[in-house]
Amino acid sequence: MTTSVPSTPSASATRAGGALDPDLVPIDNAYYEEVGDDWWNTEGPLRALHEMNPARTGYFDRVLRERHPGRAADTIRVVDLGCGGGLVAEELASRGYRVTGIDLSPGTVEAARRHAAASGVEVTYQVGSAYGTGLPAGCADAVVASDVLEHFHDLPAALAEIDRLLVPGGVLLFDTVNRTVRSYLLLILVAEKLLGIIKPGTHNWKMFIRPTELRVLLASVGLRLADTRGLGPARSLPLLLPGLLRHRRLGAFTLTGDVSASYIGHAVKRSTT
Image 1 (spheres, rainbow, N blue to C red):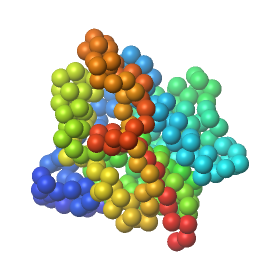
Image 2: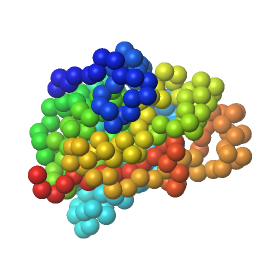
Image 3: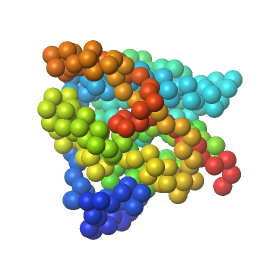
Image 4: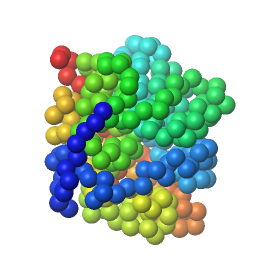
């Protein structure tokens, strides 16, 4: 899928205003191609994703079961868009869902395939773009976009593709980052620049998405934002600091009422076209 991007977005441009110019709003998405099997290293560069994963996948599983009461998990088709090394895809597949993982990085997809094979978990992985996956329309009861919406320069195009993949009444499951002063301090200044918990350059604060912006963008493609909740460390800051400073560990995550940094939620596609 070819999409146009504005040549000169202003620094104050909002996500609801359209696509962002990669030359003016850079982000190091290529880094994830280098991670390889370290995607599954719980002490490695992506250890924070492992700490977040139970809370994320628990929420996604709960939403799917609430939307499909009594339906067998293996009849629910899930597309994990921007699946990375398969942390979310593999966990959902282990719960019985029929999961297809899509990622732009061939090396990342190979790492995901290796781990799934070694774990005995059945996931279909394919190399593809979020702007044009190559999958048939209406092939998914749910699309997962976990920790990837803030990596898309053309977010409207990605959401249009998500809408195309979903059946009427299908659900988008996501988590992303709010664009606030707090998120800049926590994720960019502290986590990236000071502590190195996150690889510097792999996030750009201008690409973070306010819930109000996301609601507008979702509505523009026929998706209704149904729920948002905060996603953060379960321990309070005083209890968190020793492990954070000594071992660069955040510990387990939980859902909260504070969406000022990371937040999780779901949106529902209209039932009729």
